[in-house]
Amino acid sequence: MNSADITTVKSILSQPQNIVIVPHRNPDGDAMGSCLGLSGFLKTKGHNVRVVSPNDYPKFLKWMPGNDEVINFERENPKAKEAIENASVIFTLDFNDFSRVGQMASALQEATADFIMIDHHQQPSDYAKVTYSDVTMSSTCEMVYNFIDFLGETNGIDADIATNLYTGIMTDTGSFKYRSTSSKTHRVVADLIDKGADNMAIHQEVFDTNSPSRLHLLGVALSNMVILPDYRTAYITLTQDELDQHDFKKGDTEGFVNYGLTLEGIVFAVIFIENREEGIIKISFRSVGDFSVNEFAREHFNGGGHNNAAGGRSETNMEETLSKFNTILKSYKDQLNP
Ligand code: 5GP
Ligand code: MN
Image (cartoon, rainbow, N blue to C red; front, side, top):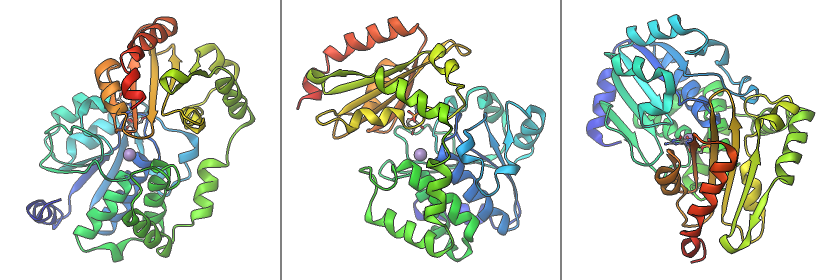
């Protein structure tokens, strides 16, 4: 954030505001952690703050401090709309285009509030009065920490705020191992631990609360994996029937895509997950190295994200989606074998 933006933010926050904080649809640990962490901080500064999520999120995030106050736009629509209409300031966190909030987009478009964006994805849209966008950042949670630092207020980070911010940094960096994890990230994390984030307890809440059916579903996913050594690619499929047979709950497939990258020599991993209700195949892309899955997802599957982690979708069935993917892959052979 430049100094003009910091001045603008300080001036906006110098008086009590009606603030709404919004994560992207299907929020992950970074989206919820940044929203709940920022919410906790702004409340201590005397603002009236609501977190409004476009839809539900996984159970492994529902222990987070402040979770009980989150308004679900899908489930509590009138309450959510009223909060957005009455807001004087709306923070949008961990996304940078209204298309990422699904049905909630029109409510944001009609809002009269000043928008503040904090986000680390590629190609930000231009809707905010203040845009704090940095694609080199590990996570939006690290940026919220910086945001609080720009205001000179890191002393105001309590244990609950620290816990939320730690959670998002941890999940978005794959527990501090992805390329975007910098020495600064580790310094921020160290300070969050000093301020009360319990690193072991947070890891357990997020990663060690599996159901047996989820692990069985992982078994199915791994046995469905197709490995294409010539393309240094591995992809997984899961059909709606397979999900149904394993009592699928939101979030159960989180992280499955990464297993492809644990194979020696594989640099591109994909998972295709059928969603019959939405009539789509939801796709997650991951890479190591210079192959940009953001560009791949943007160009071919109506999505986007980061260079090494992106999402997208296909409106055709699994068979046609896979056929399209395998065809497209042919033209990337050189890029995948630099
Ligand atoms: P995931 O594969 O875990 O859903 O998402 C990976 C990354 O890509 C996340 O940072 C997520 O915010 C982003 N992402 C996922 N789906 C989409 C999409 O449809 N469009 C865009 N622009 N980004 C996405
Ligand atoms: Mn993120």
